[in-house]
Image 1 (cartoon, rainbow, N blue to C red):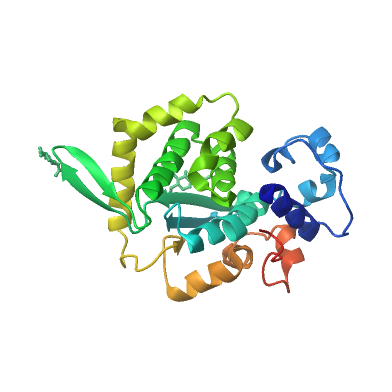
Image 2 (tube, protein in one colour):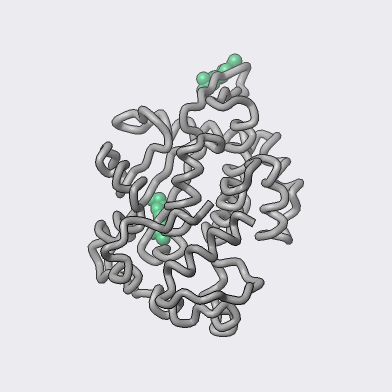
Length: 254
Ligand SMILES: *[C@@H]1O[C@H](CO)[C@@H](O)[C@H](O)[C@H]1NC(C)=O
Ligand SMILES: *[C@@H]1O[C@H](CO)[C@@H](O)[C@H](O)[C@H]1NC(C)=O
């Protein structure tokens, strides 16, 4: 329900005229995939406008986060996902769920401890395994967004997978979560997080083109959309021009 509300707000914001739209049965990542779907969702206009030809390197946004941290969830749900929906042509997003977790080696197997407890470790692991299994951001990002925007991140996981990836059996994710693959992947997240220079001091810890400063972080949290538009060195997409003067997405989301 929250998801639908967020998208409605987003589209109202993105569209030039505010009008009630009939519900459409396609996930937002498919809205611009064909003219028929765009027409059914009444976004033909936006789809054309939001598809620029990229003529410079994409803006790389790396998010170091943990699945149950409130500020992380707010950033992912209110800034990162909506911005990526509109600007994915000029963005490259990397998600590293680990954050302030810790690991220790117990006879060759990594054991993780998370800031918000066991549940958070499970959430981090599910999201890591979802990324590994689906590979393509257009497939895994909606699942992760769905989880992070739900009231119970972990309880929502199975349903979120079912909604966006009905052909992927939950058992495949579970096997990864409980097996060596998940253990290895989470250790990799730990290594990537520990390799941060400067080391992270809080979460979410946001990198823009590989760089973190408190100022960049503040700009990203305030309006990632504007930050990406301003950082991109190529021809700006029309969506960027439209957003000028607006500070951020409307607060009606969530
Ligand atoms: C995004 O960045 C990753 C890591 O640097 C790289 O492997 C990938 O090819 C990039 N994707 C695009 C579309 O630029
Ligand atoms: C983890 O511990 C095992 C034995 O307890 C050891 O053989 C292995 O080298 C350790 N791995 C690392 C990366 O420290």
